[in-house]
Amino acid sequence: MRSRLATRSARLALTAVAAAALAATAAGTAPAADGRSKAPVEQLCGTNDLTFKLTEKTQAGGYLLVTAKARPGITCYLEGTIPSASFGSSPDSEVTPAEQAVTETVKLSGATAAYAGINPKTTNDDYGTEYERLFLSVAGDEAQAISLKLPSATLVDKPVASNWHADPADAVPFTS
Image (cartoon, rainbow, N blue to C red):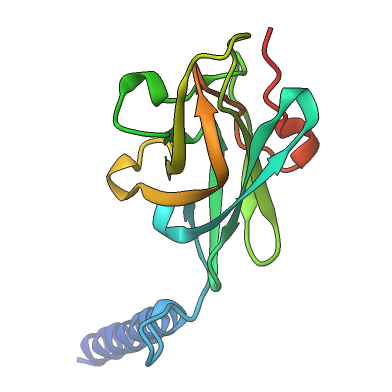
């Protein structure tokens, strides 16, 4: 009978320890009263996890520098591929890769940013279509694309984009 009681006690103790561990894990990831997670979330970045800023640059014949930062309380990883971007609904306005390989993944959190460069016009002529907006998303998350107003009306013809980089100097979209 004692062995039976000892076994039951051992099972109760094990159950109590497991319940405490589950409660501690749940408390670490449970949403706060405002619905945000108390613990940092580490995942691949989705478009809605980020804020974006566009600036015009004059280097390499002129390009748009896209700066992406994680929203407060989010830690995510942005893969070193090109952003999914277009200037309009025409297939001719979709950006294509300026780089031949995938680059390193960038961990975004707090003030850390990732940068991609978009050259809207790679042709050496006066032809193209003028646009005032850029449609942008993280590659693979096109359903969540956002619309950004361009700093100025921009002539677009065969646009290319660099991959996401941790250093803005690496995001210059050079074309051959």
